Amino acid sequence: MNYTVDDVMATKPCKNNYPRERVANLFSGRESISLEDVAGTPIPAEDRLWLLISLATPRVRQLFAARAACDVLLEWQQREGRLADVRLWNAIAVTMWYADCSVGEDVLYAAWDAAWDAAWHAGDAAGDAAWERQIQMLVGMMEA
Image (cartoon, rainbow, N blue to C red; front, side, top):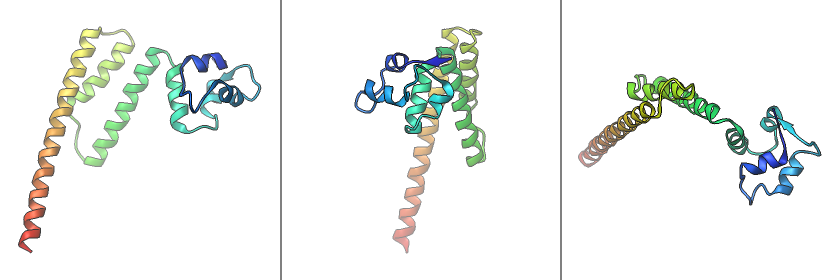
């Protein structure tokens, strides 16, 4: 699929960084550009990613978000040497099923509520562990 300047402007890019004239200049005289052209545009990667996400269909955005979350959880598991809470994995799976119309919004919201609950519990546990580490560090410093 190809995109025009009007298509890009319809995504409402940052007006300060991407006024219509600059976007038109990035097209280098072409009437439309491909996804590969967008991906290779000489702008910051985060801006290219933002534009690609903005141009994607809702289904592709949902699947992309789920796959990105999966990558993050896998990386976290490798770094930490332990498994992430199953509720996080379930939320990713349900998001993919929702994108493919296999489950309804009620299932999606329930899975995300459970994932948020897991994230809050993990954050509380990490905070508690940090307090304990700081207490032990301070005690060690005071005993030295």
